[in-house]
Length: 262
Image 1 (tube, rainbow, N blue to C red):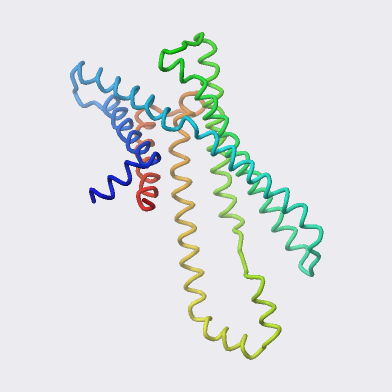
Image 2: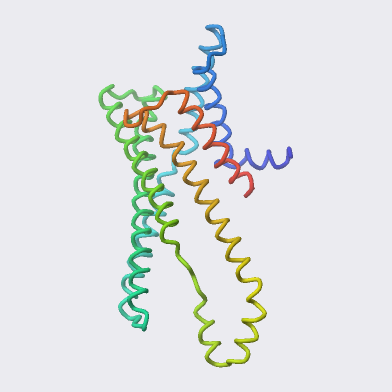
């Protein structure tokens, strides 16, 4: 357990989630009626602000990864569009429909990662102001932070739309060599189908359950995180207590996914 915890906190995402959990506890301590004295309340407020500032240093270069993912998706979409005219098959209608569905999903992902990149980049602009190294004029700092939170809000909305689009229009993948092998040897194909038929439904059902559970966790995390920029912008009517609860839920769920990979 301690070894796993050590590996978790040595990674940047794991350390960031740990600090975020502590920050959310400070938010809850300030909002709940715990009958704390003034000194403890002041210390919780300082801890919340300092933890938030420390986390900004950890994600300082996140905009590079976000823009890289967006550019990779743009390149993949352009290649698929350039290759599609040469593939004339009998099922052209169904293939074009699936292609348009996948194209819309890719567009949502591009918008999501692009907005995330702009959010991190604009947030980095105000880091010198937050540390007191180079204070910006208050109106300018507020404007930059407002625009950054707008892009954060947009990114989470695109992420939610992409998750629901994947549920409504799931993409199925099939191996291209299976049909050719079936046409070459009919008896071998029939015997292999008989052998694989009992286990195939179980695999498809289990994979579907895993996909639905993964989408549910993604929607839960994004919906909870959406409360933070929504409250900052005044677009979502929620209290700071609700934001603190949402931070705890999203941090635990997303942190657990990181925990399982380290």
